[in-house]
Length: 348
Image (cartoon, rainbow, N blue to C red; front, side):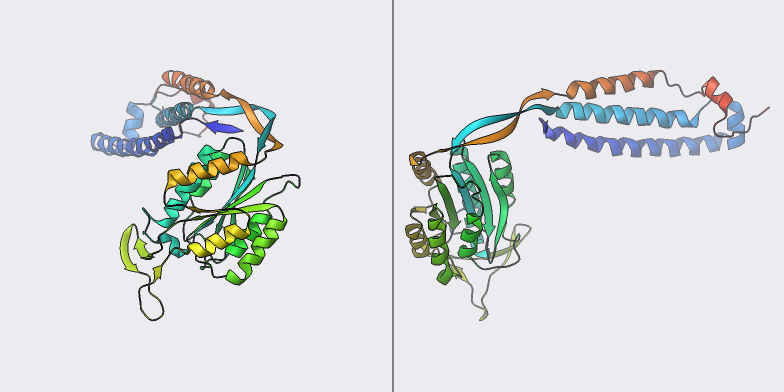
């Protein structure tokens, strides 16, 4: 497994096309200047030992050495040993509502960003639990299967948005049903599902049935409400600039409200609790305490250990190429000239 320490240095690679463009510009300028001095045939006779290919070769060596130096600065590491470690934890799945109503800004900066921050802060409090992520709107979509890779979880979490699912609406029942497939360990005693939503549910009739099925499978369901009961319009933005507000079929501005009643019912039926997500610190602290009360299941997790730095190989190769560049002169190599690889005509 490869790990990159300083990915920011990859931005330096933009120097390479700049160097190539400058080289071509200088080459064109030199040819124009030489033509003013003498024609091509005369120049070849005046400078018979000058090689037009050597300058290109020197440029290639320089670009390769520069690229290797940049990779060296990034400092790639290779995991040389795969270890199996024992961990104790709970299987946790986060189902995040990504319907358009989550764009409402009654809670700063908007409901979806608040939901993502809540999940991120909960992950920060975990130590050895396994986590999975689901996105849902009119349908549920698996974002991340059960894993101990918290870094990957945060990456997928930040990429979630209201445009990722074409089917709009809020199908909480589908999110619960999909979450039930995430728990792959039949012996896991504690399975927890966190539903983060504003409570709008377009499948109320089947949601409670899905909750009951989940409870039968040993899943405890907590709900986290984001938004305000007074509600707010749904902004439609382009490149961060407000264009309009979402309208209904009658042309009236849609006001979306936090429906705590639905979330409370789901939590009660799911043997969990409803959590007010407006105060991030309080919500995270409550969840942390709830998870600490639960029995932990021991499981094995494989991970790469003993990452070894590899930058020295790239730096060494770059220095070697720069060293070779010193010995490549602009004049033709005598033994290579005798081979006449390019079938050049010799001038007597």
